[in-house]
Image (cartoon, rainbow, N blue to C red; front, side, top):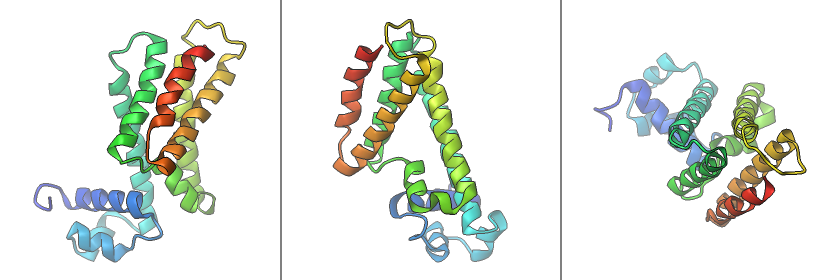
Length: 186
């Protein structure tokens, strides 16, 4: 690994893995330096502080999340199908992480409101998720008694709840269940 990635990439890859699996507060600078196999000066050359590294990690996760989502949905033209495929994407993410949860929910639970920059990034990420759902919902001809915004909020909250449930139960069953519920709501 050390020879293939740049120093900055090694720092980010190591910090991302540690922040996700053991938390921000439980991850020390010395552990990042040791596991990334870098000198302390190299870390501070790229990041002013551990918090600066955390913000970079969150922004990188956000970019990766939405780029991968876009690629995942690109071939689905049917809006209802796209909505169900969005849930498939979240299922895939949970399966890849052994149902370890959402990067943003985890960091928010750990330090969210204590740090305005983190809180803002998390809120922006979740709002962008809502916007993605709303874009799909608004293109669906539906028979629901709920308006587009209400449906968006309900589906967003169902998905977020199922992500949390997935990390608690260690299964994606609740996300699978949502796929059966959503068509009935539209």
